[in-house]
Length: 280
Image 1 (cartoon, one colour):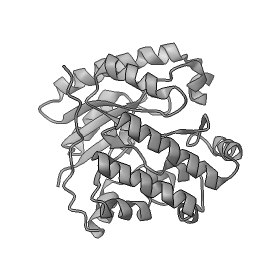
Image 2: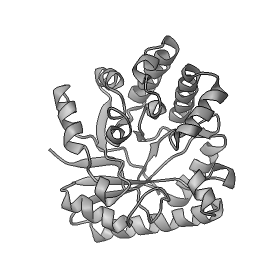
Image 3: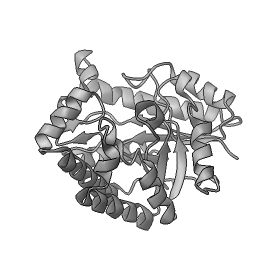
């Protein structure tokens, strides 16, 4: 069985909330026996208003973060060549989804020409939902209820799927990160309808669902949650591990645990490669 990560490689070199150099993380993937890895750094903010709090507090501007992103692509391309005989690296990025982000993503696609992208949602109503419990509560208050927060999240995700058609869908149900009652919330009719609509879109578009094992560190289980995972498998959606590593120490963390769960569910663990962009 191949060891792979469809969503990995955040590094302290290019991500303020991660640790270690990107090359150190790549070396760890080699040591851990990975065959291929998508390096999927977060895209930079389109303006200062969309910086994460830690970036703003450190005085990083959108302009400086955009320059850092260009450096990131240069470094991944260098590492692709240097480690080609030991590891297949894909040079990618993870999207953000907020007002005006689609245009920014398309500009980044043209400027950087990645191998593929991971389509993710980290904001609802313009507020980051996975950065802190306080911001999650703010987003919930703005939405009016936890139920509406989930509905808004999955509506935003659906719009992203239909417009960007990313090769990989990142941590499908990240919205549950600070909801201790998420299993009940996911069963609400309004939420469940949207979950199944989005899974149908993933299936129809032939996208890969990120089996995100960082979820084990953040909640009781991986992303997506078991009921959603089973619904995805019933639709024959491609499910591929993503360690979502943010440091050398998190490379491949929870991998065996995640694969064991997939095997228990009857997955053959033959990992589908993402559809790569064909640039001229």
